Amino acid sequence: MSTCATASRDMNEPLAGTAATARTWLLLEQSGPWGAKALTSSHFDPEVGGALEAAAEGTGVRVALIRRPGRHADCHTPTRHQVYVGHTSPGRTWLRGAATADPSELLSLDFAALGAGDHGGFGTPHTGAPLALVCTNGKRDRCCALLGRPLAAELADAGEEGAWEITHLGGHRFSPTLLVLPYGYAYGRTDAHAVKGILDAVRKGRVVTEGCRGNSAWERPGQAAELAVRRSTGVDAAGALSVVRTDGAAPRWEVTVAHSDGRRWRVTVAQGASLPPRPESCGAALGSPARMDVVAVRAVPDEAGRPAHRPAREGSSYEIHATLTSE
Image 1 (tube, rainbow, N blue to C red):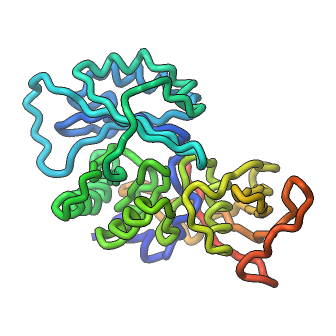
Image 2: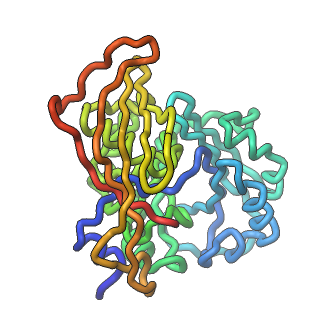
């Protein structure tokens, strides 16, 4: 059976630069089945779901439903919902949790402040395992159910306490897709063995770049640029790199990536079209998604004018290819 995921894999479509963009994630537990637009088409109160979506718009906050892996029967009895809020900007990441019997209480949150990285005292700091959020919503795309649900179940069976299913991470054709909090890096085409390595690295404050789609804190040119710097220099500390400036507009950007130790790099990102055409989702017409190519990574002096350390691949530009999607 041909699916958007098999077509993408067969074409070796690059992953870098395809993560959903969100500085802050608001995750709300809701059992039972999910519709394509889960916040308004599930057993969750659609009026509250719509209001949460409206409150988050333009703030940098992304709202999603989560549930534990396994059977999803929902008997509609009153229950408490687990809630997580996580901010992903490097150097200022945090993840906090709470439980509520009335999700409408979340409408009182200051969404603009959450998007800016101010949790306002919500809940308590999360001290448990990192969250491994696997997209499993087959009503959005069958690949998410066919590939995501078995992965989520395998992680749970292996004892990963932070394993959850999530409603939507974008990029169905990269299924199974994964978001890891607190650092906010997304992954595609993952398997349980790879996820174990990713989570082991997170526990040590490190980032695995293999299979990585990017950090949700950045817009997609910045995601591709940051990953290019990591891969060319070997920097893997989670909070070490930040996208501090992006100049230009499609089809070409100059992205400045800074290290917490003062080093800086200038990354040239060019946009083109992905060929040959491929389905962006199962059942969709063939299309040519916008594509970003990282043309060069150049070390530049820091703000004090001191020369930066040279990239690991001295004497050449490091190149990667990234697909930019509209999801």
